[in-house]
Amino acid sequence: MSNSNRSFHESSYDISPCDSTQTSSIADQLRAVKDGEICMVDYRNCSVLQCMTCNTVLGDSRGICGEVQSLQSIICLKVTEDVRVNKKLEMSLNGHLAFSTYQVLNCAGCHGAVGLVLHSTPEHLSALRNLFCLQKDLINCYMLRSGTCVKASKINFKHRLMDKNIKELKQDLEAQLKQVKILEGMMKILCTHNVS
Image (cartoon, rainbow, N blue to C red; front, top):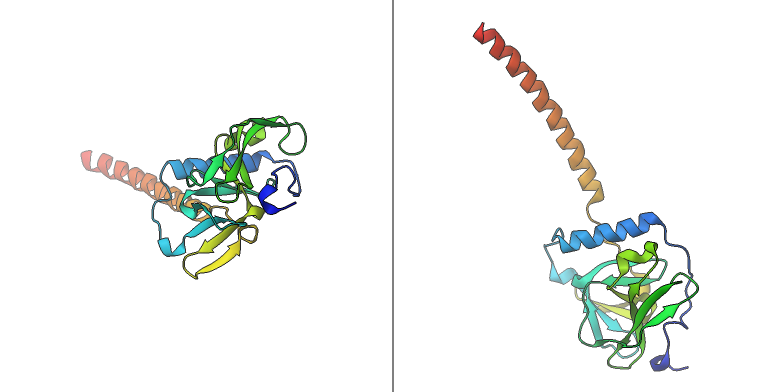
């Protein structure tokens, strides 16, 4: 079978259940992107997502909000006009996509399947509804900084939303809050001594 006739269903990948931590992580990543937490873009560090078969540009790293390892897919908020959404609504009855309805995404250049858009899903996939899921093993990434092309399956697209820094900041704020409470207590004692 030629690459242009490949089907999303025929792709081989490990199907494992998605746990609730992964779903909440995806939801947190989406919320952060929508809320504008990730706002400074160094375009030299960006990459362009291309169809592995014909090199048609499908999107870029600015539209990526994470990945779903169990589906081996990159989650994108937006893609280029060269990603065509198949009008036919399909349903999966088994595997990780069991009881999900979706539309296949095709490359406008070679007409091959490059991913899907989930519509109706079980709860563990609910964070992915109406987002573009590009299958990593069908995508190449052109890295702008180095000018090289890398298979998307070799790249980790998980956004690091400063979890470690946030925890440290929280600890610092809690320590400062304790200091403020101690100072308030001292101020109350001083005020009562000055009044009397």
